[in-house]
Amino acid sequence: MLFSMELADRPRRIPTQARSRRRYEAILDAAAAVFAEVGFDAATTEAIAARADTSIGSLYQFFPNKRALFTGVAERLMARETALFDAVTAERAGAPWPELLDAVVGAFVELRETEPAWHAVWSSALALEGEVKDTAERCHQHIVSRTAAILAGYAPGLPPARVEIVAALLVETVAAMLFASLRYDATRARALLDETTRMVRAYAAEILAPIDAK
Amino acid sequence: MLFSMELADRPRRIPTQARSRRRYEAILDAAAAVFAEVGFDAATTEAIAARADTSIGSLYQFFPNKRALFTGVAERLMARETALFDAVTAERAGAPWPELLDAVVGAFVELRETEPAWHAVWSSALALEGEVKDTAERCHQHIVSRTAAILAGYAPGLPPARVEIVAALLVETVAAMLFASLRYDATRARALLDETTRMVRAYAAEILAPIDAK
DNA sequence: CTCGAACATGAGGACAACCTCACGTTCCAA
DNA sequence: TTGGAACGTGAGGTTGTCCTCATGTTCGAG
Image (tube, rainbow over all chains, first blue to last red):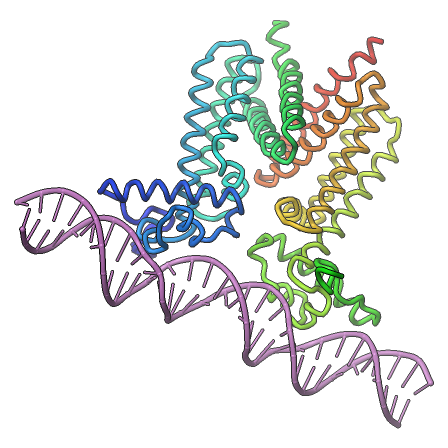
């Protein structure tokens, strides 16, 4: 209240009529597409409005500024991402470790292909200030924590501090390779990701070894 | 000649007098600092000039545009980076594999701490168009090729196609973790990088195993 | 049907960043 | 010493983008 009447980065008006609700979604989709194509800085609010077949005025009725648009896109994506991760891991609770790994990687490859803004969001979200950063960090942290919990289940002997850092490494590694593989052509990208799962499996085998040898 | 009188992204005037040579270096250093602090897009040529204790006019005598400044910073960094990699690997030619790995990671941790623009350059270089991208890709490719050659030496039985992709994975992974660790506090960053070498070692052990069993 | 509220529009104000250019200063070869 | 080349300067032209607001349109409850 002291700082600003208007909550920064939050949608400005929640649409009630069907017409405007469609428009709202169209703007978010357009924003995702434009951010995906040129990145946050080079994206233009006018380009987004044009892509959504609407006018700048309407766009600014819903979003107070450009960052709010990005936040909207990011939050939708992060929500889908955490949901996907939780679904995949819950579905295979107790499954052999390599199977779980493959399932998660596979699911995220699909997500990355379905969501064109994935790359743009993750490359800008942590560099930006404000709510986007928080959302991204929350999403990341959620996945790391869940991974740590799962990992602890597979390797009960591991000290908690180590579990934490191993989980972080796993998540960072898989995310980074999903990221990097975008710079490769299709077959090489596939090869890189396959090799990634091999690497992670070899690593996991070493960590989980004490359990087998117990 | 057909497209532009002026080579894009190249320095405009090569300084001859000592005074201007100092200025040229000062501008590059200032550019590196500013790019490091706020990234490419948010960096301002005026801020760079101010930081270099000079005027915009002088800045534009040496660099035709903002991208040329970034290219200059990037090329200096990439040159140091390839030189460092080559030096470290040449120095330990034939050394045991884990030792080589630790040496390379250690050297790059130091480089990353010495060069403030490291993060900014690598996060923007591949997203930008033009010469910066080429330089970055050349640098990356050089390191991957050298890694592949070294790897082939340690594991002569590995098919060349596999060697190539394994080398790419190793380089991408180490680079990504150096990158990611910047988001962590000092002790956690150290832990992440230590854990990274453990992972890579476990992976390498599996790949190199046929040699031991030969 | 009617009237107020919700919604939509796009020309243009405000501002910020890149880059130029005309003028002034420093250097050095002869 | 001196003339000309190299160098240095910073106010401002140009451009492009964010965002506003006054005006017009559509919707739906009563």
